[in-house]
Image 1: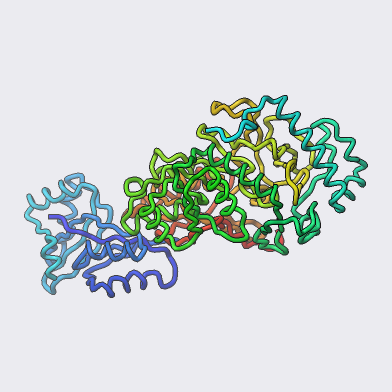
Image 2 (image 1 turned 180 degrees about the vertical axis):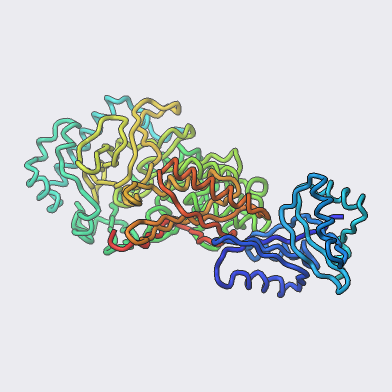
Length: 142
Length: 433
């Protein structure tokens, strides 16, 4: 099952990240996880939030270049080597990962956010290997 | 529709009319305008020496500096009491340039703009919304009188309050828009923000744009915003010569037809002042041959263009000036390379994923010039690859067009300034270039 990520373009200028966060706060959008990748000039802020569509709408009307990206949120058992096992399966099936970052949900369970250009096939591969993913509804309920 | 039979004269008829009017103007100016008489005396030429159109090139030039030196009325050929109107340029540096109109000049102006409006597709059926700033600027009132003269319904909404402008367009059924190209794009943007699609919810079918360069890319962008069936023509003028009405495009869009029975154009080498042969690029010089208050002779416009004399498909025989490649005043010299902002605009508009707004920043970095182009993202992305593609594409296109490396600064939508009048796209932060 895929889930939604909120992606925002931000210029590398003092206070710019704070402006994005203020818009989300003022509109009651809660951030569950984030990743910020940057070059010297700009960055892409990637967020898992409780209400991604609403988040995108309020950011767009505040003048930010933002969009929804479909990603996978994969449950990873809290055991050494489990992430590596998952990645091995993904690689063996010739699926490339564009980027990934962690999303901590509960003390006993870990999850990672994964972006790949072959979402559908990745879903099938994970399912076949009995690796759980989280649904949009589960994220919303967090 | 062709407004006046003078737009279809044979070359011989036109030249005869021009010569007659030129002679009359030179005599009058020599008699009434002391600073120009001095120039002619210094050049050793008398009014009676003008016996053919080719003698025009013997007359001295008039420049913007001459207007400033004789501020406010020193180059006028009529007493102040004969004036019906005074306009002035903004004069961002130093004194403004002041221009005046007699009753006859007002009639000439109205006639010239009527022709240009007709060439651009306007008729008595149109509801014309004039989104140029009313006031000392000649643009708004010039178009106003010309469009009124052909029987169009005028909505003199001026600039500003863009949301209300859209409401007028919708409620009054505006069919014709007068604006700068950049303001026309801004209006489309505002319309979409308030849920109005200019293509389907409005009925604007004609755009008469001016006071800024209209590049092909800008025209395409206007079509994208306002609809493919909109007839978008550019027109040209400057307050020193009269205001709008000097020239304008017809539906074939192959250059702007000059109202030659009022204005004689020449193309010169801007450095040497020498007149260039037909078809060559150079600075446009205009001689006003039917003006009463301010009949400028061989006025240097600083605009770079070239002339085409072949008859146009529209039936007009008047000479056409190509859409400007730039204003020699706007030309930037960056690392020794001549750069027109319009060249950069063409590049920005040709890259997918960018909005039509941009800013050119030139700075001094040690001994070198640093060029930065600020552009706005039009479509959101989650991919660095895409952002890099945009940057690389602008950079490599600029390298091809200008031979210069530029830094590209990507911005969020609506970050760059929007303009209602002439857009200010260049920030030159170098001192004492």
